[in-house]
Image 1 (tube, rainbow, N blue to C red):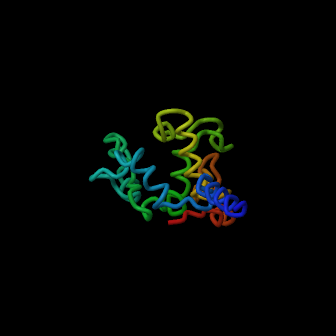
Image 2: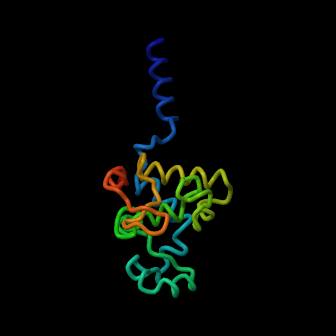
Image 3: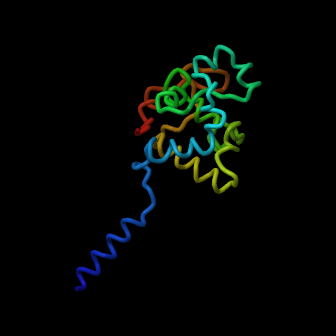
Length: 159
């Protein structure tokens, strides 16, 4: 009987554990978060791909439409593709040394409160992977250095 109670308590504890960083996936955690907070501007019917956005950035900024983030493939372009780091630079809370204390311009949209924004940012950072969240670009620009192979290898964005 004691053994059975112990197993029951153990099973209950396992169910109550928070999602571990390794368990964060695009489909289960990131896509719902982006749908709630980002899709109004980044999945609108006229939202451009990153390549289209780069061709006429001024036009899209004026229209308040950002590059598409409504598919895993579009999102990867902003994380570890030609526009490496764009996702992280825009959503960073300013604690990254390259941010110099200034949050990214999209951080404020990650939630209604500081606590909600911090929790959502943690989900995104856990998804990108330990050491994968960086503000570097594919090529160095100004104070922002180029992404290294070691940094790129740390990006773990599970589908």
